[in-house]
Image (tube, rainbow, N blue to C red; front, side, top):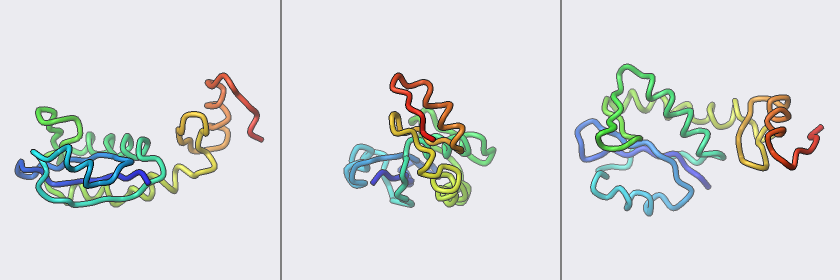
Length: 130
């Protein structure tokens, strides 16, 4: 199952946030030169949407600095400031994005049936979902 993860890097107070549908250890091996310590992992239904939403929160937190010199998903700050967003992943992935409102063509999660209905219009094989 897809997952969202966080690990501490070899840089002081810098954390990597990411998503993967593979085994976590395989993903960590790809970041071998940065990996210091595993901090967090959570299985989610739609890791793409959850990661996108999570990154929006992290990018807007004044206590965290995005470390683009290292990579797109690296943040400098205290782990407690990262953790507060990781702890709301259930809300992001389950409460606001119910499985009933997932586009079966592209996997996009929508917040309502009417939103899903409107979204489906972009697909060539549009079918009424009533």
